[in-house]
Amino acid sequence: MNRNILFGALLAAAVLPAWSQNGISQEMLARYRQACTTTPTDKALNNAIAVNGLKSLATTAQNPAYDTHFSHEVKSKGITNQQRSGRCWLFTGLNVLRAKVIARYNLGDFQFSQNYCFFYDQLEKSNLFLQGVIDNARKPMDDRLVEWLFKHPISDGGQFTGISDIISKYGLVPAEAMPETFCSNNTTDYARIVSTKLREYGLRLRQMAAQGAKAKDLQAKKEEMLETIYRILVRCFGVPPQQFTWTMRDAKGKVISTKEYTPRSFYDETVGTDLKNGYVMFMNDPTRPFYKTFQIDMDRHAYDGENWTFVNVPAEELKQMAIKSIQDSTMMYLSCDVSKELDSKKGFEDAGNFLYGDLLGIDFPMDKKERILTFASASSHAMTLMAVDLAADGKPLKWMVENSWGSDYGYKGHIIMTDQWFDDYVFRLVVDKKYVPQKLLDLAKEKPTLLPAWDPLFAPEP
Image 1 (spheres, rainbow, N blue to C red):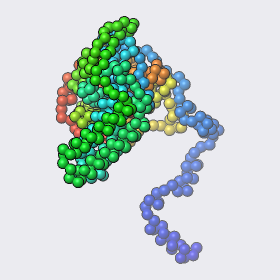
Image 2 (tube, rainbow, N blue to C red; image 1 turned 180 degrees about the vertical axis):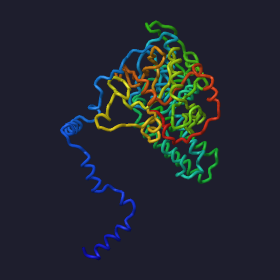
Image 3 (tube, one colour; image 1 turned 180 degrees about the horizontal axis):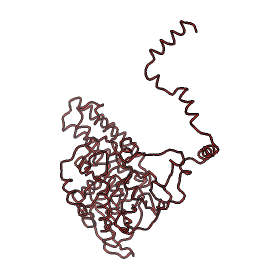
Image 4 (cartoon, rainbow, N blue to C red; image 1 turned 90 degrees about the horizontal axis):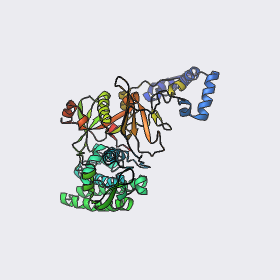
C-alpha cells in the first residue's frame, strides 16, 4: 500500500469522534446473521408472524385462570359508556356514588349526569391554568413549571380529587337534567380548540405582566377570558341547570317521589357524603418509600381545590382494605395500567393471556418497579372495583371492576383481573375511611412530600 495512503488512513482513524466508533459494524451484522437460526421451525414461525401478527399467535387459547364466579360482589345496574372521551375518572367516581343510591332507594338503571360535572370541571381547569400563568408570570417561558402549564393547559382526564372538588362545590344532577352531547362524548375537537385559546390567553397574561400590569388588572382580564371559555362550554355541553324537577322511580317503575331540586340539594339528599374528608387515596408505587404520604404539585381540578395526595403502601394493604369494602357492599375508585395483558374479548387480565416470550424465544423479566422507572408502565385508566373471589383461606384469587366502555365490552361491561395482575398493574385505590386501618389514617394526616407536576406516573387518567 502507498505509504501516504496508509498514513492518511491511520490519521483519520485517530481523529474519528468516539460516537463514530460505536455504531453497528459489518462484523456485528455478520455475527447477528450467523446467530439467527433458520431451521424449518424458524421459517414457519417467521411466516406465521408475518401473516398474522404477534398478538394473535401469542394469545393463549384457553386460560385456566379465567372464571366468572366471585365469592363477594357489590351489585350494580347498568353499564356506563364514556365513549370517545377521557372521562374515565369521572365515570368511575360517579359509579361509586350511584351504586349507593341505587341500593338505598332500590332504583333501576340510574345515572348521575356526567356532562354536568364535566362542564364545571372544564371551567375550573381553565381557571387553574390561567391563574397558574399569573402566579408564575415572572418566571421565563422555559421554566419547568411554566413549560408544563403551557403543555397541559387543560385535559378531559383526571383523578379522584376532581370528584371531590367538583361535586362538593357544584353538587349533582340526574342524567336526565343535563344529558350527554356529541361534544361531551367526543372531546377531541373541543379540547383542541379550548387548549389553543387558553394558550393564547396565557401568553397575553404574561405579556401584560411583563408590561407592569397590576394584579387587579390581571385578575379582571382573566375573568373576561373565562367568560369566553364559559360560552364555549355552553355551546358544546349545554347550560347547567340551577333548578330542576325530577321523579324518582324504583326498579319496577313505581314513583317514589317527585321533587324540585337544586344541584346542591339533590346531592345532599341522594349522596350526602363528605367527599373531601370521607375518603383516602392510596398508591402502590414501589419506586418510592412505602408508608409515606405524597402530594403532586398543581395536580388538582380547581385552583381552590385539593392537590392529589396519597399514602404509598404495599399491594397487600390495598387488598385488605378492598376486601373489607366489598364485603360491606361498597365499591371503590381504582386505577391501573389497563391495556397490559388484556384479553378485550373476554374482559380478562392475566400474565398468561399472551405468551410473547414463548413465541419469540425471549423473556421479559422486569418487575413493577423497573417497569415504572423505565416508563414501560403507568396508570392509564380508572374503573370501579366491585368484586373479589376469596379462597378458603381468605386470600384473593381474582377481582372484577365495572368499566365505562359500554355493556358490549369485555365481560358484560366488566373486566376480571387475576390477583397477580392486581399486584403487577394496579396503582391506586380510593377507600372510604371506615375501611382504613388507624395506622394508615394517621399517615394520611402527616405533612406530605411534594412531588413535581410533571412526574410521569401521575398523568391524568383518560
